[in-house]
Image (tube, rainbow, N blue to C red; front, side, top):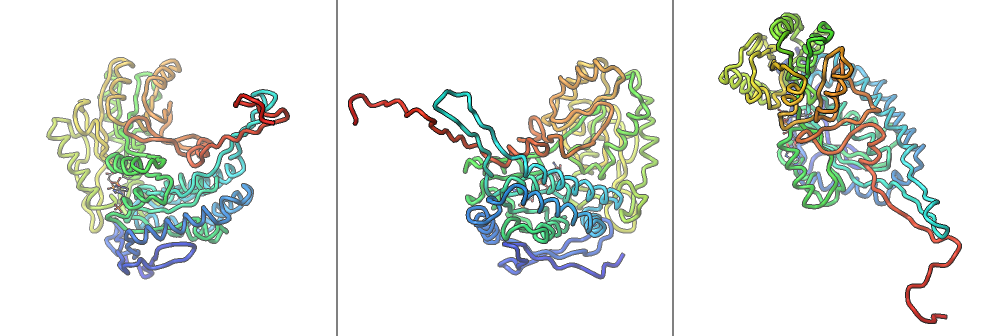
Length: 495
Ligand code: NDP
């Protein structure tokens, strides 16, 4: 494939596109096609300073936090419309940089527009409470004020979707932002920032720095930012929390997962099988919600695993620009090496490789075969650690209690699911599973209205839903003395 229109991108600071102070840049190569698709400015710590200063000024002195909610509502709604206008362009950018199939990139763009639409409505609902029952001489107000400048650091697996899980919610309540997309996939985030400016956001409300090698750390440690919102690995999440903690900044973390689907013997097995294959193959498994573990009742486990293999064989893997493709390229050589290391460990630990287990032989790019391991023990690394590739571990259980115990046995707790026709079993498991989202007889659906986030090492705080108002605001209590004068505390005649 030849790309003739390689875009030269700069940073976005204070409403303008500017070079990095160093003048340095880097290139992105399509992981599926091995050709350069874009160039970006390589930001340094001084560029982070400039970005935070722009966001700080826009927050402290600019109109954005002072605008009526309905004005911010209109801007965010316009962004949703502009995302839809540029749907094809955004989806193609996402494919060329992330390697995901075009059909799924288009879905991602549509879902991002929905997030901007929904977040817009919160701009009109960020009001607080009034207390008129505290006594005859007092009236109190509890108001939600925007927190301030938010540093947003996003990953490469769903670049446009994940920034849209954070940015519009921060903007809705009046915050300003500095955004750092992954250096592998900055294109859609920069385009989104241009759309936010086109939609009428004030100067400095959204700033974007691109690059790697210390940019994220500079943002997390910057004293000018009030909050860090990060999506990525648990290891880096811990570093973000530590550096934010030193300054007592607020932190919101959406981290890894090792998400189990429990399949009971009484389940609708056809539906469960499809969801298990989808759950591990979707986005080539590069997905925090990947259904990378399936816990199958031992009476049906053998036949179930055989049918998973039969169906996984039929999943079209290949050129992500082909509309029929369902699994595209792995995002980078580094990620491919992680997948290969885990598969080697699974083999070394004695798990039974039923399918895949290697790269796909293609002329260009980096592709991995859908891979299924059976005979996986809960202590193996492929059962407990996030792989971020199309690799499924099949485990077995006897009782529901045992299934819940195995499901809860990793350090993660992002999502979990159960397949059963017994409502009582579904509710019992839902209560016992330590995860932020539980799916019963469905998998991986998400809605802007529903909060999203993890238990345990899968994160801190929640995104989406009306809870997002609380994520980006702080509470102020205002008390008013009413009618009668306040009772004197100092004894004696003061007249
Ligand atoms: P990481 O999660 O390791 O995060 C990399 C990002 O974090 C970069 O933007 C980097 O910026 C920034 N960063 C690094 N150190 C710090 C710090 N101390 N403070 C603030 N920001 C920092 O992503 P990888 O791409 O390396 O992926 C590794 C693994 O993470 C994957 O294999 C997967 O398991 C998991 N992952 C999980 C995701 C999820 O959705 N939960 C998404 C993507 C990955 P800079 O380069 O400027 O330092």
